Image 1: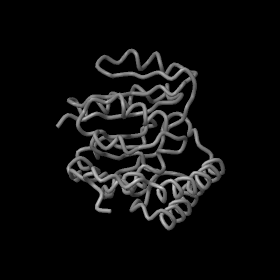
Image 2: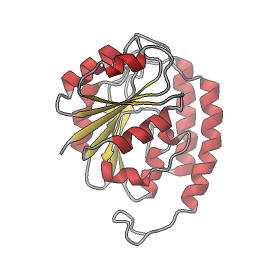
Image 3: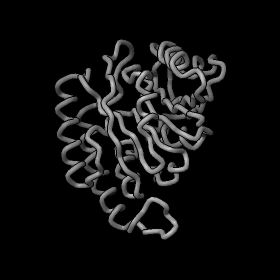
Image 4: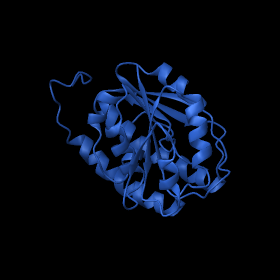
Length: 229
């Protein structure tokens, strides 16, 4: 089946060429949907220089959730794979993710030997624990962008700022199985992180209760092929 790889970039002019070159070499037959999330550097110009890459350009910075959501809807492949544009995700893991994908599932990467600061790892561990206890979403590392799902299941996603952290919860709420696989995680060698620990914690907590409410109010459609309720 045809694969589409969705990858957002925000002010990543230092690493974009290396990231896309590696991705094209590793997945030569895949459709690549690159989203320029309102970058103010040369990211947009560099994207336009890659032949065969489908580029989407936001006029302003809308965030990772918007980038993934619009990229997924622009994809034409049967299977959609998401990954970060900072070079920390390893495209060599894509084949493993796809191999674990079943007709009624979403596959999520879990970063092994995570190459981040202790503060980010500690904050992520706490956030994942709280989210999992509230939503029981079957995901232990929602901060890992490496995920794979069938394009037909994108319809279960609801666009909001924070979606990328709650994709497994929404997919599980729609009746899909969440499958986790360990993936490589590499240190960032170029550019700088766009997130702060405090900002993510506060926003994530706010979103958590919103998603919990939403899932408690979901409509149980009879025609949903994945739901048994």
